[in-house]
Image 1 (cartoon, rainbow over the protein chains, first blue to last red):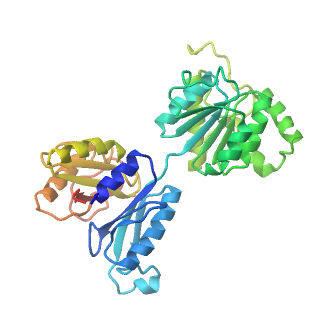
Image 2: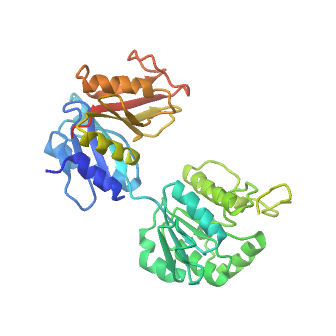
Length: 276
Length: 105
């Protein structure tokens, strides 16, 4: 019989989603229930009804990528009336969600730097470009996947995978590629969509997006364009940091200066930096 | 937790008993989120961390006393607002609660 720990460790190593429920207070301290989507739960918290309710709740926490404490009655009671005059069972639900994804369109120098920083932050990274000579594994060894294709088929086949924790970064600067990538990204639930380019490129891109019918203010509000925080970043690596910092800030809702909300040139001077 | 697995597996393969301490709750300015974990084996070897270095020493002591049977698995609170007589605080002024248990499951 494989233990709960061994089952959990295998799931964590394989980056398969799993949540471990542990009783931390109340009857049966230390009792555990391991839940995974599309698999039978393993273990028990001490009562079948408690197992059923906690299983359901833990799957929801896992879906949201959250870990935290929940409390129940000893037989899975959840309403305040049912919880009066019963001992409380406190459980810790620890979630190992699948890693967030970053899809990067455009196989340029900025892409390699961004893929590296994204890996540090735990993303599963896909690089996509239609040009076979640029989109190679050799140029992007840090990426989990390198695809030679246009954006539209990628979004059609796999766009449904993207959710609020995922990011789409469009670095091509090329309208042939940018416009379908933006269209594809807007059709997903991706939590972050960033599009690279100077303010001039950005203005032209907005015209082209309008030409294909992307005019809904709610859609345009999702686009971080030009991409990144206004850090004065110059090198591909600094730019990668500014993009990832913007992704974090958008997630946490903190007020940080995004390039999108500023004016004037993205790069000023430049002689003071040694980067190229 | 992922970073702990290799060491835990090695310790267990060597027949060493292991305690696992996980952050289950934070209040105020806690340095690490719920799920941050460290493991301690019966000879006091450690992997992982649960704070910015403020409470790890005390966690080792608690973990060893659980492995030695001197106390039961349970919640241990660190921070200024606690009333559980733990002297160790967090420099950030926050409070963290850990669940510490033997890894025998």
